Length: 94
Image (tube, rainbow, N blue to C red):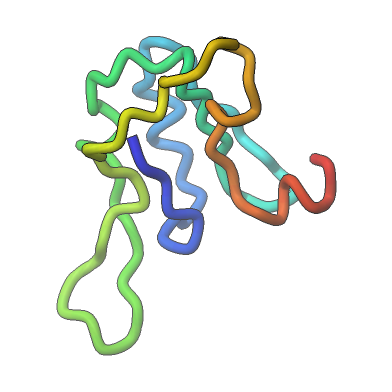
């Protein structure tokens, strides 16, 4: 799973449809935090994500997408490496 915070519009549809409760809302940033270790990789969040259209683009690109990367390769299931979030969340300690 890949999360692009710049494409996220803060609609929270992904949180609503996630059966594994792998998404958390960050109200200060109006973005989400994705816990990869909880994720079932069902891609329901990818299906509902409307995405964002930047100037010069023909259509919106989704903030969530399935990835070929193996992100869950970690010895600790609670590792910070298994949390995807906007860089501002880490900087501000949110």
